[in-house]
Length: 557
Image 1 (tube, rainbow, N blue to C red):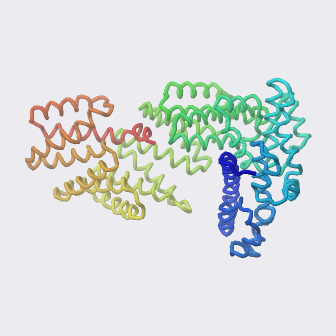
Image 2: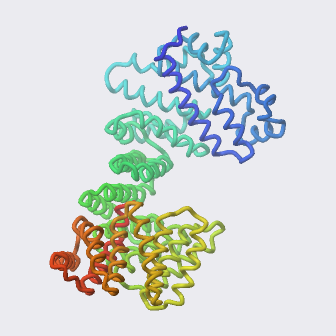
Image 3: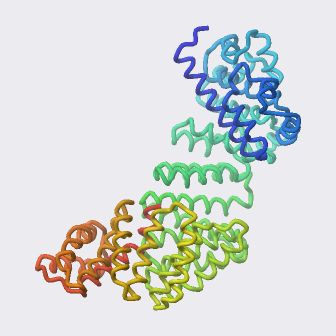
């Protein structure tokens, strides 16, 4: 066989599919076995990779072989055989290569040995396997093709897992929707099967994905729903429309699972719609997000006591995020209070922490620093009681606490908190936090009357913010410098800071309320070259409001 470029490209695609399987297996095993999987992933398609070869190179020993069998259910030799079979199945299914050519690509010198090994793992000959995958072509019409496609997908998944669909259970499902082919989650392999279903789905167009989920597949269990939602959050950070598409798939998964979900369907349906609303919010479609939440609330209208409280908490949290984006902060606080009430009852620390952090951000923006302290105390206690507390999150709490003490005039406590924050900051390479702490320390130095130190720290923070592209916080530090310069009569420097850093930012960002009048007042003062200290202080207040706006923070996520 000629190893042409197209054939080798197909072989590389097959290798990539099997490599993903190896990485999933690697994540399930103990630390001691991971180097074995690293070696296998690097060379699994190599004809010379054998158990003896791995032993000679010191990759495995007797103890590791025993541990591998205990954790994977098969020995290393059988596992390598299975990987070869996976490669062979992909090539047989996706290409028109002759069986002997597939065997050659896999390193078999004898076609008979490939047929023997393939049969050991799949229970079929290569020709039978290929015929089964393409058996739908003999059926007539679109319905036959759809049934064959789903049957092939089901067989592919179960073959890869080494499990079979019990006929009795399949017949029971057929009674729910006669004539439909089903794929459902097998309890012992739920996560793995959900991942495989996702791999099949992402080969399709978005419309075809939705069609498969709503009309041709029936998925048992919420595993694929959860997987798609995780993907939606992960990919949505990079491509927000993609996040929406995946949230729509998750919703279709639940709608396609109605019969199997039974009593859970209503709750999961409402949750899926709320998560779609959240994805739409992140994509900037606030109208679509509100419509989704309204639709979810209509579904949620069931008798009191018949709802899943944990799901209710998540829906309240997602809706609070939407209200926050709309700057309806009091409504957001009410929803977060409800979320906290439920999550405390369930002992859900993660949801409590997230809700408290949102409340802290809103209260800081609303200039209610005294109201922040109970929430700061609670979230700090929750984090510190964890076995492995999130120390970056703790750093943020110390930073917020320092600012709250400053704003309430408690300089002594602010200094203590700043010391704790700086000690934690030394553990992490987090430039933004380091510059923010410089700026806070500048405020403390200014309150103590050390204007030289304050200006040095403000300038250091300003340069750092601008290097990181945060022009709003950079402009805030510039106003602090301008105030110090104004008090010392250094008016040309004040003008340079305002025209270079502050006014361009105020003219670009969306302004609300008094901030619009503040910008006009400042522009007129600059044009007249008669800048009052009060105008600088108003500009500082406006920039501080913009910088602390919880909705602005969310838009940058």
